[in-house]
Image 1 (cartoon, chains in turn cyan, brown):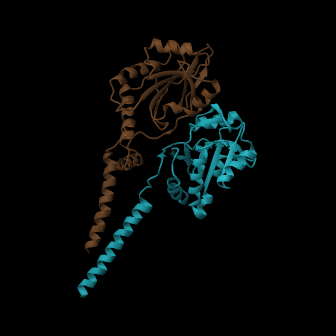
Image 2 (tube, chains in turn green, cyan):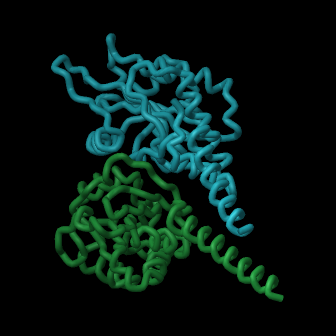
Image 3 (tube, each protein chain N blue to C red):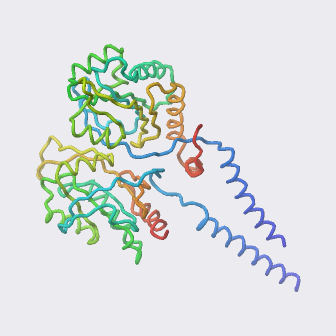
Length: 202
Length: 218
């Protein structure tokens, strides 16, 4: 009986040790399996200064110390932009008190129609913390080109007026200002959330 | 004591496997250097050519201008050789494209057509294109880090550059020389194809480990 008890205690201790070590290895030592394409950029992401929907100048470098999710869209976008922004809002909501360490920025690809007021109304519908950015067409073109964002007015008019075709990737810029991950359109909130949880905690 | 041996075994095997991967580098990858810039160009057939057209394809870009005369960096010759080599190359179903971009605002579509004919380009694979001056400056100067500037003799001085971009629009290799080794470019194209093909399911973990351990070819 005594031998059985010693064996059971030993077994439990062993299982706890192995389980604990595996947890520590996977949780803290092994790198996370990020979703999207992980970049190995040697240079910080291209800085820019645009005007926020509050009317203030905002630079990417203002967000050093936060994880930035950068997206290019526009206020009259009927499907792709809302679908992406909803997922980003859901992902941010899962962070709890760490949500303030993640910032979503949307740069408009339709600066002609996206006035400060329109941008404010549109972007805060998804999450009050989200920031919409606009600028002159030349400023927007320069930033979008650097981030590989193609955009052009669509030929056909709709009830919403003209549409703007645009690249719909989301870019994650880490706390040090490096472009870290590129996500394709259709990435679910769960994937953004898992990566954000890891990166805001670092 | 037995559970402890198992623990040592698990930790040891993990450390050994990771060390073996890092030392022997069974999978080679090219670094994901940066995002390639957005491109809004017009090609030799008056068709719009954008970076979105290249999504899902592997593209090698070079940069020149049609009035370039000797000692013009012979980058177009490299592209011509590559075109011939790619016809014999097993791209495993992946589209590989060549794109020559002119940064000279004087270059018309006819000039591009003429150049395409001079070098016997198969324009389904090899496109020649140019665009608006300002947009080109952002894309080539800012995005691809290409140096080019007007010369006093009416020409344009530029540093030779080839850029390999994957189907995600990510720069995977740069060759900053007028005559890079063709074998090296083909090897790099093969590596990008291999990653696109095999980096799925469990294979993705292996490829991400290769990126983590900087398993780059020499």
